[in-house]
Image (cartoon, rainbow, N blue to C red):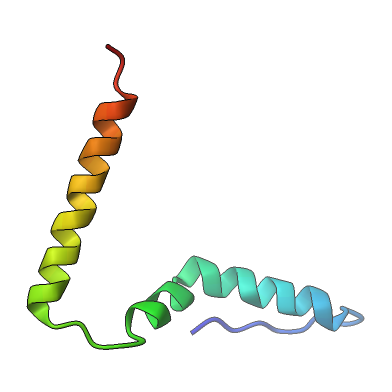
Amino acid sequence: MPVIKVRDNEPFEIAMKRFKKQCEKAGILSELKRREYYDKPSIRKKKKAAAARKRALKKMRRAPR
């Protein structure tokens, strides 16, 4: 859990910005989105395979000919 100590004479906006950056580095928002709803294991497996196919196609398109 990210913790921010507000420094003396530090504006709230800057402290909030530091907190958001720490949350992003810790991956809290991506984890929250992933856990927003339940995926059955079979659906999770299909999504993973689809993402791998998409990456492979993208890699093939970028490869020099």
